[in-house]
Each structure stands twice: as C-alpha cells, then as structure tokens.
Length: 189
Image (cartoon, rainbow, N blue to C red; front, side, top):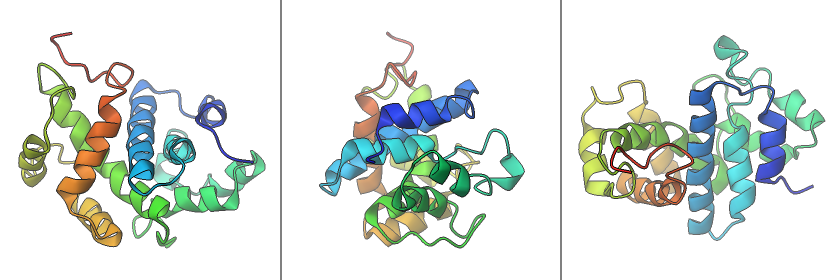
C-alpha cells in the first residue's frame, strides 16, 4: 500500500495532538514534498513520511522512536517508509543510518524546518518573502533558534551532497505554498 498524506494524518491523529507538534509535522511534510520533487520522486509519499516522523514523540519524548517501528508496521506502513522514519534518529537516538535520498532528506529537514519557521515568524510577511540569504544569516547565528541542531543539518546536507543553502531554498519553497496552513503568512495578512 502506498502511504498517502491522508492516511498519515489518520494514523497520527490520536498520537500527535499538540499544536506545535502538528505544525512541526506539517513543516517537515511540506519540506519533504519539495525534496521529493527535487529528486524526481513521489511527493505525497515523502510528505506522508515527513508527517509521521514524530509519531511517538508527544507520548514518549525521552524514548523517541522506541515506540514507532512496530506500531507503524501494524498500521500498514511499509518497512521502507518505517525505516525512513527511524533513520531521522541516526546517531541521536539510534543507529539506523540514512541511505536513500528520502532518509537523508528527512534526517536533514527535521531540524532545518525549525530554523526556517523561526525566521519566518520574525518577518512581517512571514515565509512569503523569506529569501535564502536571510535564512543563512540566521543559520550562522548559533543563538538564533538555538535548539535546532546545526551539526545535524550540516551532516545531512553532506550525506545528500548538497549545500545547506540549496536544501534550505527547496524547503522554504515547499513550505511557502502552505504558508497559511502552517501559520507563516506573517503579521501583515
């Protein structure tokens, strides 16, 4: 069964209920859809994987990804998609190394979207006119969105063979087309 975004939302609805986690799931989902297009892959499937990536985080923040694999497999999510979700914890909470472009992308954009969101929230027009140049300035400022792990982002970009600014541009574009849904239209709208 091909995983759809609708199915991912159905699976997550009882497990991810906090507004901030839902927004984060959407941010990662839309960034993943954009990354899929970049790699000429199936955007909806990548979006669905992105949406599900923090399936157990709300209930088990100290045991993140320890309550994901069997649970998602039993929901009918494919082994390949579950592995992609597990791989975003590589070297942080597990040793599932990202190998495919989908896995490497998820590993990278999870933290990256947090900085994009923080940048967009500071701007009158939100993400609608956020440029990579502005993002990179904030990325280099370690005090800005300090909880977002820049080393993980850099490591992920290396795995992808891409520059941070290149991945950021793809993610910003992917998130921009959903600005209203993810609350990043800015204060001017």
